[in-house]
Image (tube, rainbow, N blue to C red):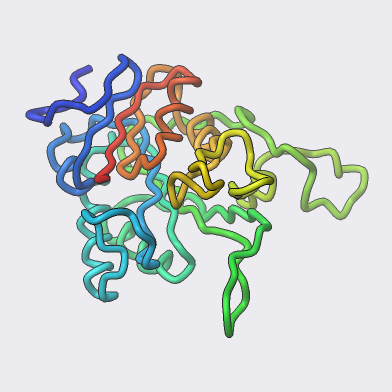
Length: 249
């Protein structure tokens, strides 16, 4: 499969993962139409984080929504009919994200609640303990849905003790903890010498793996337009999937 058309030279290519340095919107615009089996996107939340000098994470709200519209339109163009699109965002912007995806004719499947349980500090409002993940499909083609390919790592949601050992997946994912830095950091966390995160928004590998296992097959092509620390591409290779990653910094 030809992965790219008139693309810049990748900064990394090992035959499984191909990484490009650049703006996600511009790189997606140069990928062949309907060439991707699954997109996993964790874009900046316009929360004022420091992603480096080439990206402004504190846009005026109308400008940020316009950015999302442009980004999602290009995602819809490159994913194949029947392919899956997973998009994370903050609770402040998930409604706008969903409306934009609906307007593109994509088919809503679920809003997953990733309940990571480690509260994000807040003042004057409730602390956040979960993140929404939208699961959509592009209509018109064969669907991949590997039910049972992954299961909850602990029992949950059952009030009937006879059923309490059930681990079938549903739209609440409380079994994947958020990554933390410092002394208690998980083995997968990339840290600087002072113990702080090497990347400000590293995704847990188990989260990427779950989305892939459910909606892709071996040798499928996955795209992460905000690959950050490389989690999606590393997980894809481990599961026998090809991947394209894009990162502006």
